Length: 433
Image (cartoon, rainbow, N blue to C red; front, side, top):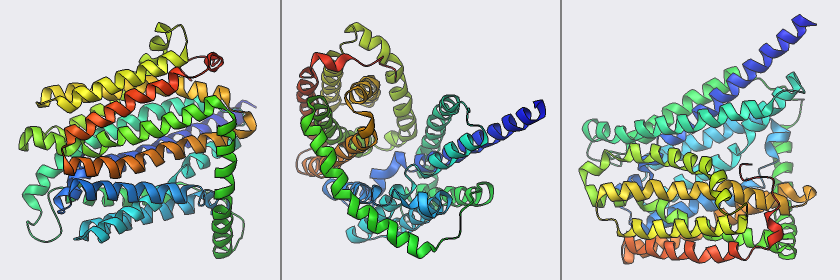
């Protein structure tokens, strides 16, 4: 018995280590391009409005395909679908590197959106099932906690590396043709994708019964697209019947609408304020974003305590605070002030994550939880899609600061949605969920 328990613990430890390695490299790969995503597009000759349209194309493809492709991993194999996602992402990066027009860039971002939709939840589901198969009593919380430390660390390190790569790109990449100083980030992204694909192919093992892949693919896509309007209709009906859920959904839409303005435009704003000196801050600012969000999340329990666990007041206060910081950020005229308000803004954003989750889960019936959470994600992504276009156009017509001022007003106004939550919405078990 002791030998069997030791063998089981060893298997669980091996699966957990591989899980963390897989997900850390996944997010490290993404982190390589985060510091320069907007600047890469602008260096291709696009304006802020075109940047917004391209971000909307990426989000739109992800939103449209995430649900219909969700069943593919379960029927065709999560490893196969994840490898297909890596292939779509690699193809998208190649298209972006070679692109010289808006249409070509849109195709590249569309392929990246396809890759994101296909990869959503695939390997997480594989490793969780593998852990439970190895040990039905496996401590999933412990594994998730270790992953929660590793992935932000991978993102932070990759962001620092990604912030340094443009200096090498400016020195070594050719000055003519479709490449620019930021192209080196996408070349590194392709290299990391290749490494991730090789590790997944050789280290991840998945048993699948004999099935016609083509038949399974067509069936799952057909069923997924057919289910999309039904799931959306049922979810919206639930939201309309439940005031708490409806207010949270609308608040999530406004949040996505406003926050995308900062995510999309902070890089060109840094260059506006600091010029070449600003480029040196791209990596640290990107890494600091994840650290600030984590700090805000850690402080959320104490923040809720200030309002005696009145989540309606805590959420409304967090949105007001975030709106005020956005307004200060819009008026920042130097890099030190910008960096300070940038970090404070994402820390304030972290304050609201766990109480909002607690309220939404407390108001959602168990049988509808997955559907409601999917709808909440859809609302925030839809808000981001709309905000990408609106704030891109405003930044091009007026200024980045002007667009952030309007985003600040939207965030501040959305506080009324949370203040309107009924007292019964404060029945969650705690802020830190």
